[in-house]
Image (cartoon, rainbow, N blue to C red):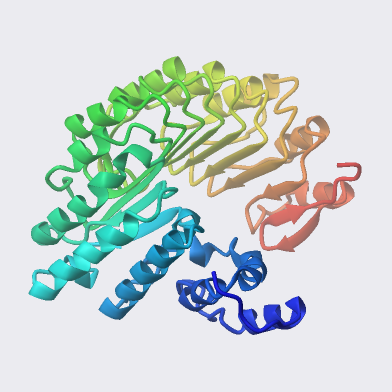
Length: 409
């Protein structure tokens, strides 16, 4: 690198700060360019290299051809100088709506530049793909060609599309080649058995999120994920919960977080358990479970609540939201649980059935680590539990949310 005019480091740092744009999605072209001026400038500029804007490519959807050319030139120049700024990039966000995946002749050149840029990012491990609408087949094929060389290093994969439907051609093949996958997120996709089978070939998966997806065959891959730590399912369109919970209980001993929001009853849910026994088996067998969120599940009721209180020995956060069959009436199964939730810190029970003073009192007496409660905003007339919370140093910060400071933690 050449040497530039000497400036005190504090002055130089102030100058470099002026190169940081206000937009948190803007790639830091100017900072990278300045860092290549000389070794001293690079040393000062490197203080900002932990900025997420240097770690994420195409965060903004409006990269121009000039932006692509500049990014490729900067990364190639840094490689030539032996500093290789491409190593900073960890995530790429690709959309079929991006102009370089169109059908015009100019897009062919742009797509080639995108591929060249990604070839200069050896540490890229996170891939986000927005597949758009079903009529973007030609653009998807170009996007797929760009992503394919990245497959061996991908550890985090996010896939979404605009309208619910089946996956595009060759997505299954692409996923099957991502042998290092640890974290997956799928949105608005109907996931067929062949895609689930491809995911089942990746036993290293630890975190899985599914939003508004068809997961009828999810049990096929969960049974092959012994390292699964977190499973999030929100608003499934098609599901088979009974089979799924059985496989989770049997095959995922390391599970720490389970979040399930059933969503609209208009979806097709095969074998939705009527009594929550499948979920109860998960709590019983997954002994490392620390967080349990269940929303709008008609099969979760008093028996399940008691099972969660009795078996959730490591649970630190519990949420029942919109589960109207969860009630805490006197004489219910919950009363037989002597030591519920010894590690509980956060409890939410909103949109459920009756919440009684006796239940709240028992939780307060037994759960000494409890610091946050989210309860109905409007207690039933005559309820004493708001006063109980105040007597235990809880403060209502906003409607329904109660918190207290825990000393010595």
